[in-house]
Image (cartoon, one colour):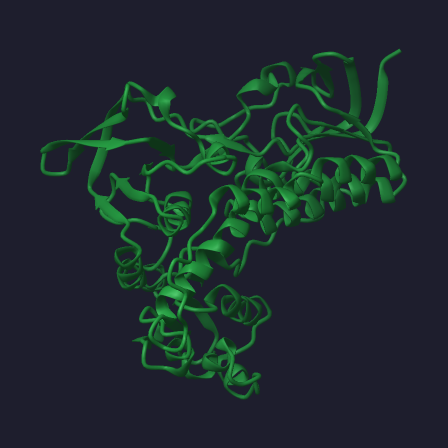
Length: 452
């Protein structure tokens, strides 16, 4: 007999966990299917393990900056294998904990591939057909195809986070979050790192002026960044890899490496789901066609969340938010829409760079009238206390309303401080509200009043 559910979730990451737990708490019969270890990208193969490795890299940078200022740590270095084992103390238990949590809530779990067999049914590779009133696609993302010869030789970000040994020469293909964060980890662990970015600059999601200031930290770490360089091919040799590169001016070069990492972005992982069998349509870019309620426009039984929905920024809090919206719509009818206002974004370089709201270019193109405060603030106490030369901000405040339109920060503690700006923007607090707030001092947040 075919098993039936109120909701089947494809995937087991943040969106899947939130949706499954909430539906089960509402008394609904729920199943979760994932062919990979339960836990999803953020907990197992992304945000959390990455930041555990960054902790080790941060310590090394703290020592570098404080050398000569009272700290003597000659010979200090990262033991890569031990750092990786520390990471696994977190990631290792995650799948078991999640399965135990689902069992306690009465959620059925299927550790196998799932693909649509009909509008509201799935075929599992071992368990056969299961069906549900609704299906939530929360299958995450995969590396974008690169399309050059030798692409198969590249290791993806997930492989990098499982390396038992760190190669001496590493090339990052791409210039976004993955390339920037991983290059800071690897360089401070002793690797020679080269970033190859075909665009004019790296970290295009962030303010160009602040990225320019951040490049000082790349230089200090010995990371070579080549912008305007497109990879044309990767060849495997007995000694490692040769990366054939063409620059924007038409010149060619060969870069030698022991490891080449795919850091050129990710796309929704949808191709293996058999969407055609369910009548779930995709647009010309391959994304799901969804309405404002995160529901398939062609199959009302199907919803999507997180990377699979690709409606908001590709961030973990967005996945959680999407899942809450979907569950509310399933339980109460389609009355809820996602709200992607003022979502902070951080690249965990050393130091980090952070952003929330409009860029300067976006604010001008939308016709806003605003005041702009921007400064390289390396002489401020927050930076001097930790001997950090990279510290700065750009904040835009609308004339009249005094609402914050956008905040862009780089330097120590900005990964936390940006959340205060996000809170203010999402809840309509003005620059005057922020100025009148008494923050604990001395902290990174105590600088906010001088930034608006």
